[in-house]
Image 1 (tube, helix red, strand yellow):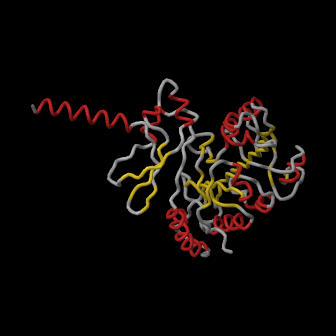
Image 2: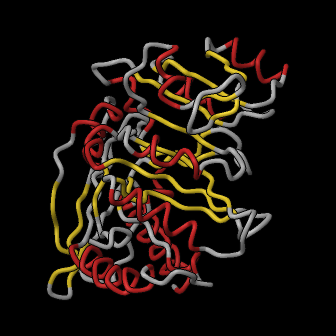
Image 3: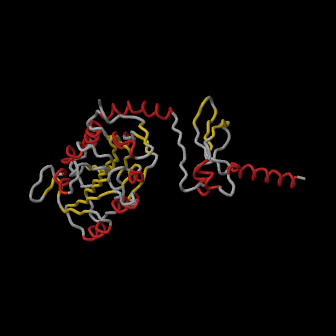
Length: 326
């Protein structure tokens, strides 16, 4: 008898688990209950299952908090690759972030903060954050690059500081379906990088970027003029500390999205980081992502987006602002 009961219990557990397996939950909380959005359930799926998954109307149900939910990772193998998953952002997440931002704003007023990397927090939530280029050092986090190919104008991408790694430019060409005109710049010519950049149709310029154009330096606006560019959509920059003399020219361009590695080789003070980010905030930029350099705390990778471009990169949600002192 115990054996028969065990079999029935096992069969019941299997049926319940099988029925719940394809369900994707996005919980928020209301009155002690979990309000979930069901994208699709097993009974909706027949011979046209994939199509049903993409067209099923979203339903709302109330589930007790004790009921386990199925994660997106668990359902990944049964979801159509083109399925758009609805995302719920609880208002208390926004409230919490804004409350903390007031404390961060107080700390960034200081000229030198040893806990710089701990204080930093993203000011917007990007739901389509891509790691483009190398997985390790040299790759960059960019928000929603796949949407660029849907723009109604040509994308213009500049890469300042290529050295021997044009992997960011190469992968952006793939992700955007060759929608960006690319200009790559470096003070030293690397033959292998030039070859790889030529393969994707990118322009390569060997020069040192500086505030003024001379016989061996070029300022940003003169560089753009060579290619008849009046704007830059995407800027990737890693020029080993030379970013600060260029900051005024770069920030006034209102570039849609910038991936920049900031350096403080000449001083141990984090005030250089703060001043750059505060100036960027005043110019209309928000912090999308930041990353500590694995070799030294004197470098930090930041992704900044101009507020005028937030609608151009998919689901981007402003959550808090603390870098601007105004």
